[in-house]
Figure 1 (cartoon, rainbow, N blue to C red):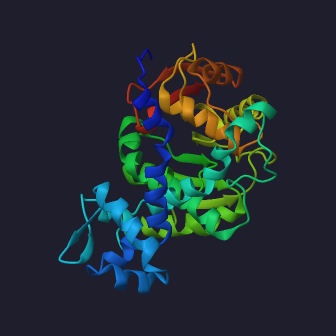
Figure 2 (figure 1 turned 60 degrees about the vertical axis):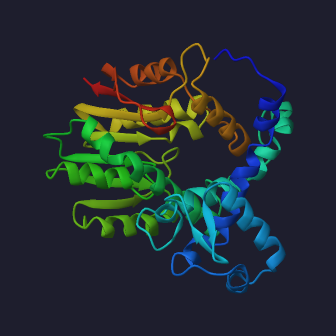
Length: 333
């Protein structure tokens, strides 16, 4: 994308993370959850948070300047329609993905060093951490993101007549739940690391899908995927793997399908000439700083993986989802 940059615009871009950190700090303090009950003075809010008024007052001022909060008669209240997304009491809560963004921020701060080294120096990424709070933020953050678009995705894919779906690397299984809700004759299995099961069980119960949606623990890079599937759904999992492992997972998905079954891949797709879009290009860097071999893939690269797995009649859905996510579909002969 061609653009004529000015000095002030570059300064604004360089400091853009300040605003992100304000939001992340407020969410990590659960400030909006507390304010969802009643407006409070800064002194009352600081007491509930167990922190000095000085820093809390500065944070509130920043939130007010961003339009996320307002002061009225000496009391602080949420503003701008943000409360449903930032209070834990709300079913629309997006705080887990905000917390996840806070957890990965240190990796981004080391981007220059990571580019020089060619890979992250982290021994463990937040995607596989054993830290309970980080694991919760990642998995329920994926649930936050999926809920924003899963109904649209389910409406864009025709699974009529399909009986078995495998959500490989599905985490909490949000997409599988929406697919089952859209297709009453469909049964699905979430296949993911055992640590994901408690979160998947919550989603299954939330959607009332006990008996139609189940969880199977395993590692899709080591364990074969259960066979006899009509659909294998690979949503935002290939980008966490190097090209060899990503291709192996697509082949495993093909082997799990019945003849005529569908492999559906959702990813943040780069253009084949790697000129963008912006969101996938930035996400590729996120994989650089957070994983040993992950990256964003081009449509051409994914098509090649599907073809090597025996898929035919490949098609890219016309729909664009948040972050320039696209869905590529192939059929097993």
